[in-house]
Amino acid sequence: MISVTERDFITKGIDCAIRADGRSRLDYREFKLETGMINQASGSCRVTLEGGTDVLVGVKVEVGSIEPDLTDADDDDGAPAGVEAADDVEQQAGTAHKDRDRGRIVCNVDCSPSATRVFDPRDVENMCNEYSQFMNRVLNGPQGGVNLKALCIIPGSTCWILNIDALVLDYGGNLLDAIFMATRGALHNTRIPKATVEQSDGRVEFDIADEETEIVEGWQNVPVSVTLSKIAYRHIIDATPLEELCASAHLTVAVNKAENLCALQKGGKGGVEPSLLAEMVQTGKQQGQTLLRRLDQLLAEEEQRIANGVDPVGFR
Image 1 (tube, rainbow, N blue to C red):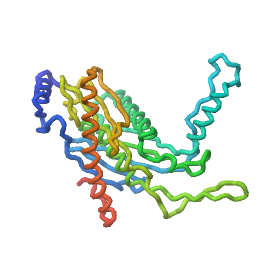
Image 2: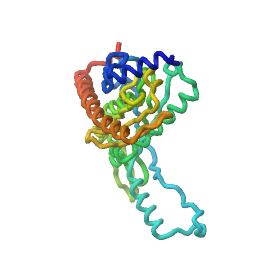
Image 3: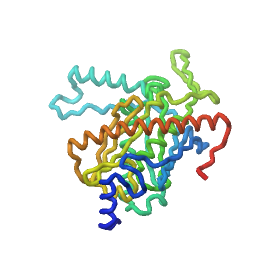
Image 4: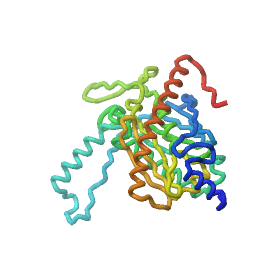
């Protein structure tokens, strides 16, 4: 998909800190953001990167049952069936108590046919599964930002489930970063109906308000991702499709506003030297703060637009 001459041109340009589109190695492309574009969703956001990448994320809030992340005890430890050590019982009981007072987030990434015309269908499916799993690990993890306990309605029974569906409308490189930006914007735009809990005759019941809503607690701490691509002995951010073809490895760094490192994921067939890995992680943390400031600025402008009653323009 890329000739030897073109690969050499891109690689040597990056080595001289001059990319084909005029950016330096650590420059992001301009991006646009708009929220509230899907009326049927609880929250939505669309992000477009200059150069083609177009991502739409919708959040649908629903009431579901709490399912603790516990598995049945295995019987392969030599103990008789149904018999467990006291420490194991106490540990599982503590975990059950912890998990049964939290809601959860379910993420799914999909690509439209127009966005995947240059990919093999199996590669697209693998990419969507990889991105979905990464988002689920990050957003449901300890550094995911969203206060999962605030999503609990009745401990041990009922909670709010945030279904985050990301649709890639067009591909122009750097998909995962755009998806995380759109996800953060969609959570900022999401409104959850207010639920009140009452006890009657020994039973716990809840009622959901028709008009009164609440924001997603902790959306400000939701991380963004910065994907660094290793090309020859250098690394860049926000790679274009041709630059991604020249990269031997990719490193995705998830970082939040507190400058905490939330997640790392390495991709590609090539390796990364330990010294370069440390440098790439530090670069990702620094660039993540710049990206978060720009993203929060655009979200503040969107909040003002919504307050003024201006309809979305749809990137005309």
